Image 1 (cartoon, rainbow over the protein chains, first blue to last red):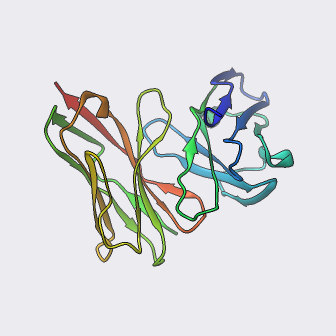
Image 2: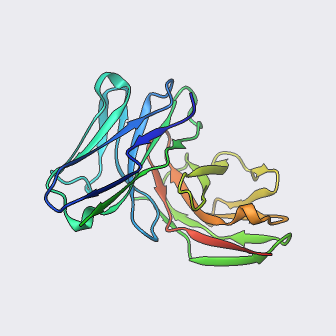
Length: 115
Length: 113
């Protein structure tokens, strides 16, 4: 296992189109997190899963955003009716919870540009 | 709500010198974790160092060390013998228990050869 994998790395879409991103976590990690990072800012939390259960969603996650983690493996983040304000880097991270101090490992992110 | 503040948007240091990055945070919790993450231009976030709030001893990892002042809610990162590969964005982050990370806005570190 080589770490957290995110696809695609880059996505350019027209305003109003739907987009879907995929995250494959480290296989033994049962926690999976999505963050959004705009230029010059730190990552902002969007949502997280423990196995297949979505445990928390940020207020940033409008009704145009939906995330799933079927079977507790990979996760998808879908944005419907994209807006220019959705342009950002979308980061995925995973961690185990066998010990409370385990670190989160991040993927390289998916850069979304809405034109 | 927990907040993390990094007041230095940019810092620069001569190669081989020492630099300190500042971070303050706000929380009413007593049990939490603090982290410094490095994000090079390739954009993948990498953990630099971690501090458990219940530990009084400051964490160290090779050339990286922290100054954790719990009462002052301060968590600074010291990088000794700076190297060109240390150039990156550095983010301070807070985590309560097994929950999400809350990040600061970052400090861009430039290494001057």
